[in-house]
Image 1 (tube, rainbow, N blue to C red):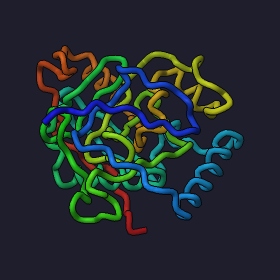
Image 2 (tube, helix red, strand yellow):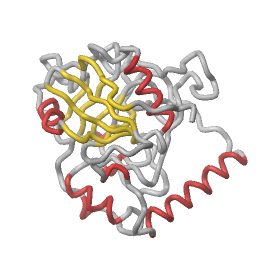
Image 3 (cartoon, one colour):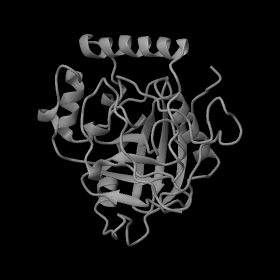
Image 4 (cartoon, rainbow, N blue to C red):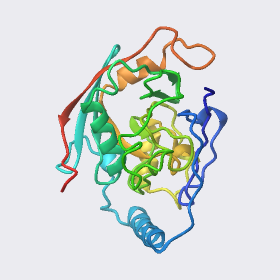
Length: 267
């Protein structure tokens, strides 16, 4: 099965190009076409615009990635890898589908023994594919709940409060609304803040991008978590010697994902 190389479908809220290096690989499933606009879509768009205005103009706007605390409405996991542990907090308030999918897979052992199949130093590290080659993986709703997973995956969740800053945990996809099980951690260390527009990106996020990250992925990939501890482990994985497909020559695996703080999605 041929691996599909992805491109970011960027929202109109953040205008940025995506280079060849910055494409994220996921499954070989065909990207689903966007449906026609409905009244529900209109309401969602209005809500998003209001949130964007708040993020841009409200000095007290909450950007949860910038806090090292785990809030009451957040979850926490530890990703145990063959290179060390990575402590991550998750954002069910802003990306409920992605977080529920990730936590459920983790509880069921879906990610146990799964490879980091694609790593690019000063870009990102990617895992979550049971096949270990970027062509596999599915959501917890695949074949069970068409309201959440169309068969191509579940929908992208964009929030003006979450960005692909260094250490962020994001869903890999094969195009709009094709999220399955694959995810990546943004590892880039380069300061890209000077290239960002203060008219379209909140000042606090531009400041955060001084520490690195991949702003060109914003709007195209669901951000649903942030590394709290273990970026040294992320950097170590990213520095692994790789083959022509960016796969580490020596296997780097997720041993287990431990749930430190769960979240009740029935609330």
